[in-house]
Length: 97
Image (cartoon, rainbow, N blue to C red):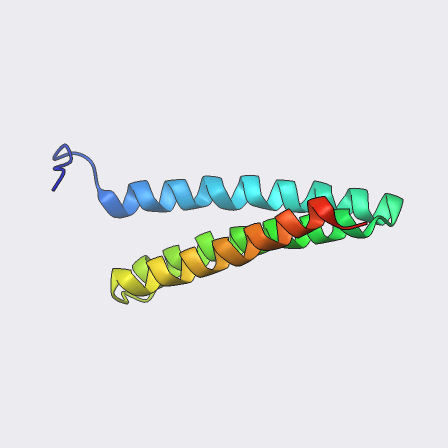
């Protein structure tokens, strides 16, 4: 097991990284959705939805792990499942017409 420096507070690091993920994921989702609204292109709408799902998975993992104090396995399952689903939608959006 990797030991962290005694001054590193793991929940703080996780919260900071989840916050960065939320901000960047929300920005990608917003700009994808904005492009979809401007062009009406279905693939851009799917792209926005896919990134929203990936972002949601990351945030839910943080909530499950730190907010609800559930076992870490639940957080990993939630994040992995929503990430896989979101990436599936993103891949589909790249091939949709």
